[in-house]
Length: 151
Image 1: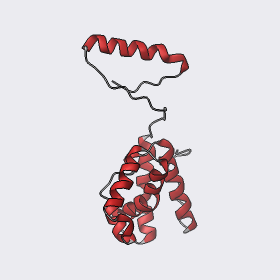
Image 2: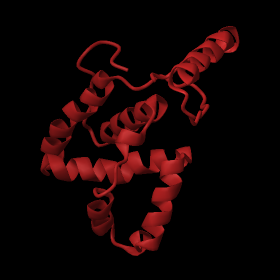
Image 3: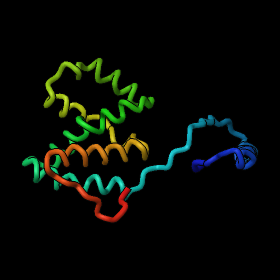
Image 4: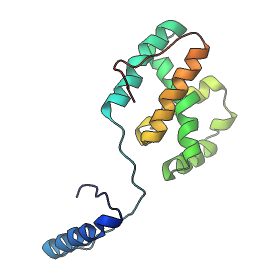
């Protein structure tokens, strides 16, 4: 079943959809209700990856190192601040593994074993791009969107 966007005016649609599903299959279902957020677009994700080679060239590092560094320095803190179930579990796993006692370079290597950006919602991914632009702008590298209005 696809996600259903339900609001005060569409409660009946939810009831109708669930009724049809249960009657047609006779199965039990688990229903989870979460606040609606638009899913991030592929364009936004692609834009972030377009910046990686630009940053790598400016920084004098390879693209993979820059990707891991941004994941550690910017993406993980944004996800962690969000307090989603995944970030709570990940923080626990990192704590148990001694991550917080490691050097920065060791942390960067370890964080790469975990998904981070794939668990971000649109608001968090916007923050990732904004913070990436701000950080590198302070370093003298101005990252621009390929298309006008790129968020």
